[in-house]
Image (cartoon, rainbow, N blue to C red; front, side):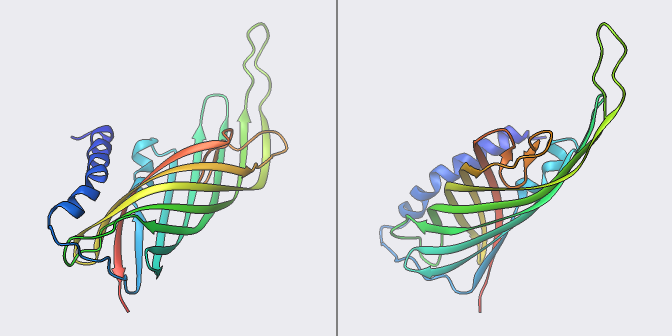
Length: 225
């Protein structure tokens, strides 16, 4: 069975070579078409969370983009995340929703005939609304008995951040795309709980970090109308 590392390496290699493939298979320069309708995609990386994190995380993310003008696409992304950590000294739960709005700019100047491959840079503004709680918290004692079990009541929080990204979308079949996105995320508003920071921020990453990296594997379909 292929490991996630090998699969990631293959997709990254495909992403880096796509711009050359798009321009190198035909000497004629075909202009980029205006995409009709909308393109809807699902992040396969989020669907793999239960396997990567041993069922401690479950998530889902969907993306919708639409051609606006010349090489510019408007993009909206929404998703949710559930976290359930059951340890010897605590039980932690987190769940919430997130959304992102932004644009992608296609950097390709020409294409293969009858295809709509993209190599793009983009920007997102992200926000997340979530809650977390913990119970069965036990502080181990080394010179005296363990402290009695404590709990942290459910606390609601929100966070905001911006993203700079690079990505590709390759049309593998008519109207079907596979894509890869590399994201750099900069938090601009930190969630603060009464007792602790969030373990993870849905859609962003580690709750203690002011900068986070992200990677998405998308499969998309262009609905024309």
